[in-house]
Length: 317
Image (cartoon, rainbow, N blue to C red; front, side, top):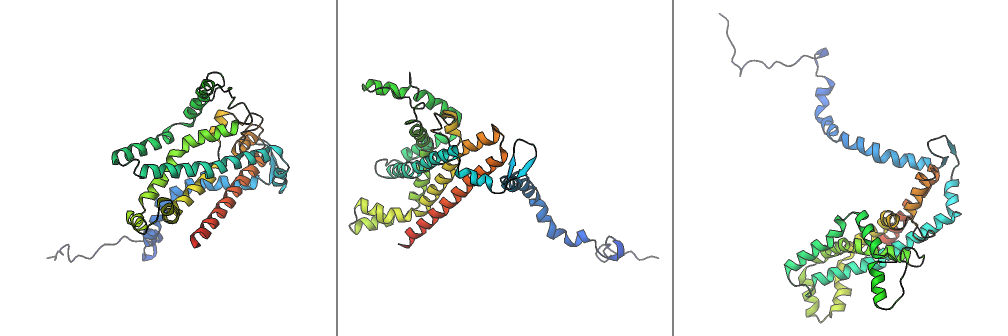
């Protein structure tokens, strides 16, 4: 009579592998499985970001027209940038636009945030309303913004010139005059990005404990003194973030100038990103366009590093 073993006492049956040992996968599956889950991200990242970045850097050392053969020219594309009048004009225009973003847009955004935060808007409901209103331009398409301001700046029937005519002043060709084209682009940029930058500053102001301002007031500090010696130092991380991102995005500016003026008149609003586009996709000079792109990236990196150094010195004072 055979004795049956219970499931508890029966020996575990293990799958047989060649040589009587566990397979390589069964021994390493717990180590490899996490990497398999993140592999799709790295495949997409490498295909659509890393490969184009490396490929365009290599391309910047070649003379390549269209998709034809390439000719290695070394650093001559970068040397040509220093002698290209349109590139230098685009560099000046982009720098002016960037300076306006840093020294006009950012202070206005800070002032607007402090206004909402101050006693001028005491109601929390009104503060919430202003936050929503500030964010609305960021939800609007650049095409819609360009069409709206093209009507406002129109020389014949635009709202701005109608207001000037009502004051007895002559009409101005805002987008057709080389003197006013870039200031017009700056005004559009201020309207577009003022709200989101003020929200950045507003979040930084809300992170400052109210007790610090009250302590400064008790010590006899006036509002300007509190702002200069208390608020600004505590806002340093927010200011650094706003200024750095303003520099980076300003040097990459393309949408609004292209939609409003296409770089005109007489290259008065030509930006580096727009010149890159014209060189690469209108004249199909891919190698020179790649050099323009990398010069743009290096300028943004150098300026950002300089800003980090300034803010570090400010923090040590």
